[in-house]
Image: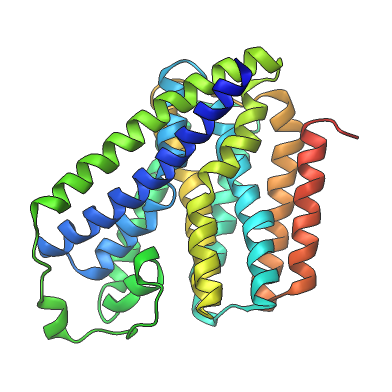
Length: 330
C-alpha cells in the first residue's frame, strides 16, 4: 500500500509540473494575442508559472484541512531553490556571474520578502490579516514593476520564459511586438489540459500526502518541507539548468529570486485567506533558521556578483545536512 501511494505521489508531482508548463505556454500565447505586452506577460504569467505547483498544492492542502503544509512547502521550496538549485547550477556552469541590474532590484526585494515571511511566522501561524498584508505587498511590487519598467523592456520576457531560453534577440522592434500570435483551438485545449492537470495533480498529491503520513508515521509538514518542496521546485531546476547551459547566469539566478519572492508573498498569502496556517514545530526549529541562513548566503553571493563551483558544492552540502536534520538522521 505504501508503494501505491508513493507512485501516486510521484505521478501527482509530474502532473503538477507538466500542468504548470502547459498552462504557462498556452496562457502566454493567449495573452500576447489579446494585445498584452511581452513584458506584462513576462512579469505575470511567465514569472509566476514556475511557482504554480507550490501555489496549487498548498492551496489544495489548506482547503482540505492540512494547514501545516503551505508554510512547510514555502520554506522547503525556498531552501531547495537556493541550496539545491543554485548549488547545482553553480556546479554545472562552473561559475555564475550576476549582472548589476539584477542586484539593484531583486536582491533588496528578496531580503524584504524573506524578513516579512520570517516576521509573520514567528508565532508559528499565519492569520488572515497577515495573508492580506503579504498579498498587498506583492501587488504593490507588481504594480511598481509594470508602471516603471514597461517602457523599453519588452524583450525582458526572453529572460524569464522557459520557452525563450534559446538564444534570441534581447530586444524586439515595435513592429515585431505588434505582431500578435494567431490562436488555434489547440491553444485553448492545452490551457484546459494544463488547468486540469494542476487541479488533479494537487488533489491526488494531498491524498498521497495524507496516506504516506499515516503509513510512515511522519508529520505532513515534514513530507511537505522535503519531498513536496523538491518536487514542486522542479520547474525552477529545469529553467535554471537550461539557462546555465545557454550561458545565461542572470536567468538562472533571476528565476530563483523571483520564485522565492513569489513563494514568500503569494504562495503563503493565498492559502492563508482560506484559514489560519500553522508552522509545525520541526519546520519552525530547523526549516526557518535554514531558510534564513540560506537566504543570507544567497544575498552575500549576490553582493559579490559571483558564485563559484566550490560555493555550489558548499550549498549542496548544506542542503544534505538540512535533509538529514529534518529526518533526525544524526
